[in-house]
Image 1 (cartoon, rainbow, N blue to C red):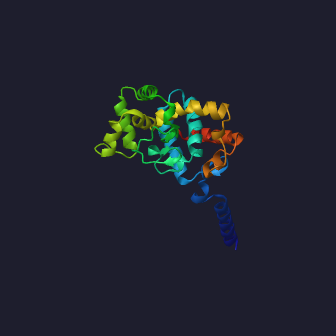
Image 2: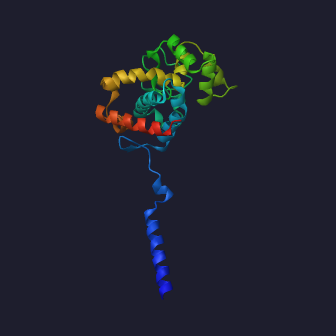
Image 3: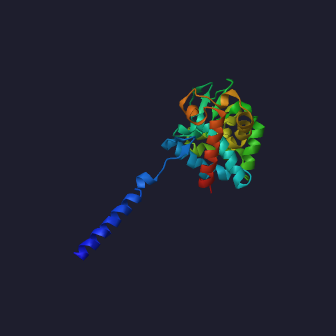
Length: 235
């Protein structure tokens, strides 16, 4: 009788422990920004930024994380991080275009994982940033690298078109480089949306801006969330 009582007590303890320990599925919480759970694609792109972009930026680690968080918020609310391949992203006057299509002379051309506006930056400045971020590389080297991870490998027509490009199309592909795009877009985002409150920074006009940037207060919360996320994930 005593042995059966001991066995019953042991079973009860094990059952209690099983209730208290979460299963692997329930233990994996989704990535939350402004209280909204990122989609699997958005999360994968944020993790890519943490692993690749944060180390590529200039400055100390805290500064790089802060820059990356602001631009990640911008491109997340613009809907770009919901794309399977945000690196080749090309939006000309609010119309998605083939990545190998030249938007100019239209006025608004948003490109790449940073969702940066190509017309805002002169080619000489973009090239200077590219060579600073990739010391020892030529501008063509940076273009070749960018084309390759964007899905246009060496030997293909698209790769050759990108590397040998000129004018605004060449500028757009340098800005599609994650380090270059984040570096140049960050000061504008800080000036216009963090320090300022320009109309295009916030709103509810589409699903991702409604989730991550409905107003300034929520946007600053989103940036804080992303700062914590990138700070935890980045090397």
